Image 1 (cartoon, rainbow, N blue to C red):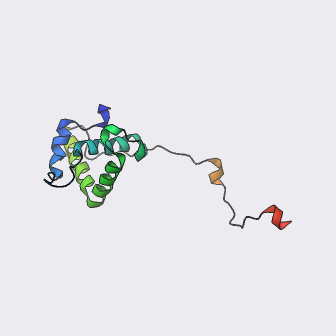
Image 2 (cartoon, one colour):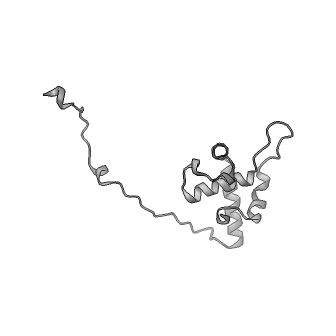
Length: 125
């Protein structure tokens, strides 16, 4: 699963975002593995509970994803990784593509359901 992981160059670019672990208290989970777990979920679209165990407990990965999303840490990570790819010439800073995948609704979803009270035939007849 190396295609779902950060390279050493990418990790070096974002490693200083995370504070050093405290000397007391519970030991921190490996932040690189947490980021790799988040990227695995984002790339595969799997539910959080299906995260492979090699990335750590799914709940820990989800909790840190939620925390970093709220405080802007993920935005900083994505900005730095994007800048790294722009500087390397791997992507064009001006051109961005949006996935055009379409998920069609089932035919039943197209019908408009009447907002009526459901009646039991046994009680109305």
